[in-house]
Length: 502
Ligand code: BES
Ligand code: ZN
Ligand code: ZN
Image 1 (spheres, rainbow, N blue to C red):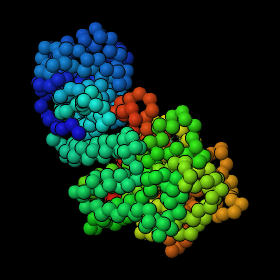
Image 2 (image 1 turned 30 degrees about the vertical axis):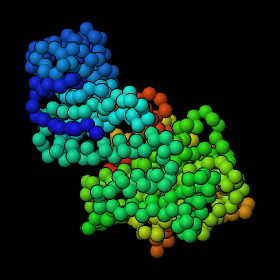
Image 3 (image 1 turned 120 degrees about the horizontal axis):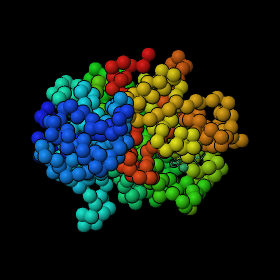
């Protein structure tokens, strides 16, 4: 993780490898953003440079030039911000992230992007940190580039309270996002359920979080039939990890549940070979839950949070579950497994039932659950399904503010009967059309009810597309694991800490 500092000192007078300056667009074309804050000679030279290099100001475009007189850094990076009147927090995050991402390998980068409020300063810091990520675990002899080492954000509002609070939070969030990406990017050879459980213990070691790991023996004894069935084809058995954060004075209790399939081959209903490699990312939900709980504890949020990581490797073998097997989820409900590739809902069902036993006020699950999610919303927008309108709206709002795209999706009751089984309480697949909603309805069957008979407010986040970027990097999003969901879950818990769900 790079070191980050914020200063009210002039951006141009800081020594660094690069100074990042924004280029926006207005009616007259590309313009240096925040030019009035620059000394006149620098302003003139950069305006000239914009023309010479042909910078258009289009979002996230980058030009690096040798420093102009009056700039202490060795080079200037011109980053596009798009229309100046539309510069919002996410535009700043993405521009800053595009800069640190492209500048990987440099030691020190100073940001002179246009900001006035503490929120804007924070956005630049967040984007810069999220973009300063490289994954070199498997590169021999140091052949990978290191992320930018030192980030300095220069801004007049550096010392204001919103900026100070925001910067501390940005560092914690970036740690969590990077940690999530590292887990997703790890090869499944190295990240299997027992290893993931150990990693969880390491991540929260110095935090007020209690970790309980149920191994395969305890899972059998506890009747966790979903985790056992999905994991039984692998030589590396399943785990259920519980992470408890319970600060004094918390008024509300949130359960966060993550799908943690460390590799999804499909099992006996095996997947086609093309892109099967990307199924190492099928544990993105569990990774996001782990690092969200860590961030929440690190920030000391006054909310009780219990994280659940449902971990298994879905493999075909002589011991694997078969299509037509009937399994029993914790709590006694039976499921006819008609497709072993619809495994996420089986491990999540166990975890949702287990979470219900701890009486949470809100349950959120997050999962790379269906290919249908990507058919519906593409690869950059996740889906929210919920049994509670207020919770669905809240998740969408805090996600949007955090810079993560989530869109509401329905749970049409008429699709439920498509999962009717000839032999068991429910089958694990149903109608193909609306496959994402069918998966959501399956999970809903396992959401606990309170004494008055109403279901506990629950939201299901299907992050199949956004969790893993199989294409090129953009903004602060690298190729590979993205860490999507962490910022939404942390923001949701911040909101619920202050204002519990009505
Ligand atoms: N892990 C997959 C879903 C997925 C697909 C995530 C692509 C990310 C990218 C999930 O376990 C799965 O295979 N779901 C099946 C369900 C089907 C058999 C009802 C699917 O979506 O095809
Ligand atoms: Zn699957
Ligand atoms: Zn899966």
